[in-house]
Image 1 (cartoon, rainbow, N blue to C red):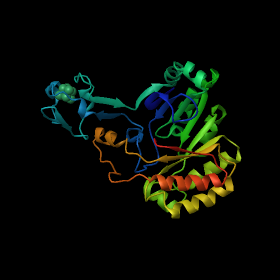
Image 2: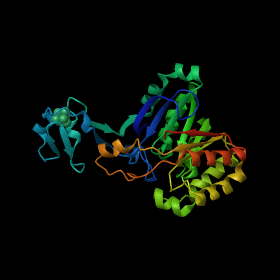
Image 3: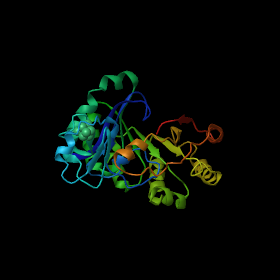
Image 4: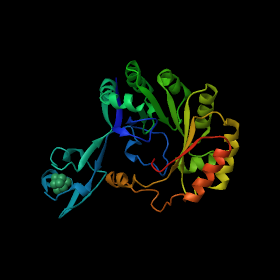
Length: 301
Ligand code: SF4
């Protein structure tokens, strides 16, 4: 069976225990303004244009029949509305890169299995992220079934904005859920992600009731979701779930994804966003620890 994958990243250290391979699935139902993987939002092929690799050789201009490109020395600009795929074949410097191609589940599993020695030595495994991996549940099932036969540890990073039946399809093969919670406040959730959080919270509650292994992940955005108003609601919700999570991960916002927006010809929506300061992060961490949670702070997301 085929599915769409944006990227397979080896030697990941932040997506679950040990050394891992992270498989980024294409397609997501949310549109979080701070998303650091904008290329994986749509379940369709996209062309990314890495203009800094351009040497100015002009090979691409010979087939630029509809003025998609403008070249000034080594300075390349492009029109993202035009057909850019045709330039992949002529550019010798990999300026144009296609992502989200369809791949066979078997091939994804085989790529992951190449690093099984690392998984064994570090107690690592494979993490499925995205995008939203649970939007391709049957394809995901075929990949994880194959990996589970080889005894590989499986983690699923999800924002949970899917019908619970998608969880049921893959749950027998899952060792750990990395559950991303953006907001408890429904109005803010809708404002910043484009979707209501009702189904997200209800799926999380169901996983908790089923006593699944869950790491709760929360990205912190200065002035957006690190406020007292939001955290009072989170603390209130969390006090009913003090033994529900393996741990909580606080992920400090970063702007590493900005270059990807540029490569897609899109505007970065969080241009002036600041990081949550260390004092506030430690304040939230301390309060969570006083409630009995194990808390890790990560600077990458
Ligand atoms: S072919 Fe590639 S390197 Fe050469 S000018 Fe075009 S984009 Fe730049």
